[in-house]
Image 1 (cartoon, rainbow, N blue to C red):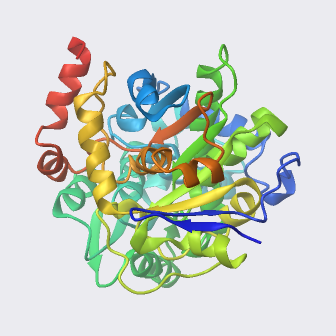
Image 2 (tube, helix red, strand yellow):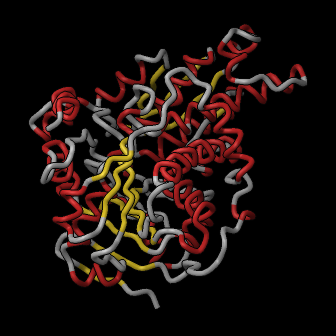
Length: 413
């Protein structure tokens, strides 16, 4: 029987289908394997300006929450796009181009060769498209500009003008459609089928199982970086990670499962109240589509339908799920921007801080601490999946610009 509790600020539920003592089932997703990661690593680490993003110790916050350590993976420094998304969307664009070139020439061209102009005219003839609520589309657009193909991005009515402009700045054509994120994904899928384009979704329901698997495989590199950065420390006991369709959460959960085996961390999925598709799916024991008004401050997580690729991994790999209010994300953004009890100030965006916001809420409830096995000796990893990807919104919420916060961090609080 699934146990679930209601707190005045959040909902939390345990996943009764989790495999507590099983090794990672590689048959779950063929693309999320050691060989797939090796290919993604080889390509992505060869890109200009690649470097592992920081894993920041938040010792002051850990003391306040009465846990041992909190390690914050700060994706605000990723490739200048201030988001983890280039690891997935841009990598999937590369794989589309590689497959097209292989089909016409029989050769597999590397990132380095394509960036050097190999088959430039053939690459120019490739069009990729995607539906997005912001960061995925920006990643696909960035990758398309880098490798030299055409790009069309679909956004929904709730996407801010700032995020729209950021996508367009990479040379993509941006088309706004009515409805939600899921409607933008459907528009991209349908147009790709009609026009003969290549859709690059971050969910398997978006029209390309192959590309959505490539996206997740690229995300897994983030988890490998975490494992390497913690190589001289004890393994983490917990992972708090936000989810929209679940691609990032599944990739990180799956990679840490492969790396740590039976010692893998207790994994908690965090979502907005308005779009708790993982919470509802764990509650029902099957995939559930959440309908109605999905809009949230955490726009990147405002998804009503989980990725079919992510479900098999998180159904067995995640231990629980939470839904949180928008206010919790806003408060966490402010808290990070100021630094807590000597911690380094961090620029965390609305969707990017959700996992940490969930941890903060859960740590203040004795019932949630018990359900999620949070103890004084817990060693927690959270993924800060974005920085100020919408600078105007970030400044409005925190009262400071991302540039000011980063400068304070560089100068040492």
